[in-house]
Picture 1 (cartoon, rainbow, N blue to C red):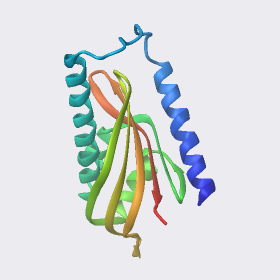
Picture 2: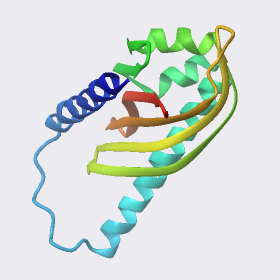
Picture 3: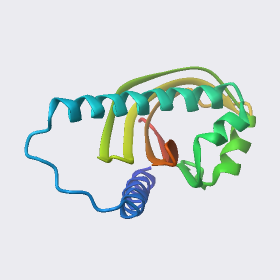
Length: 161
């Protein structure tokens, strides 16, 4: 389990660095952000938190098209079963019954104007292929804004012990 967590962390950092490298250079930030910049950051953080709920609702309701619309073309998911692309994640969605979930301790780190990482704890009541998967998980999603739309690039999920 520790090895999987380390792999998830390394993958998360790698995906974030790839996406950040796609950014155009920006001037170095001022020592103290202006109230306007702080407001914009708070708005982006709220947007990312809302996206996490929306994508989870699409998964819960088995809305494959809506779910896929939140994913970048190179999306990867990492969990105890391994590394999956968007199609494999949608396959899992079809065999998963997520009856209830709740988020806690969500934090959004804005790495750049077009890159964010959301980390949080999620408690679920769910089954997958008939197996009870209920419990508390630690999750992280890397989001990248492209063409005015935030897309999930990488999602990790590790069951709490």
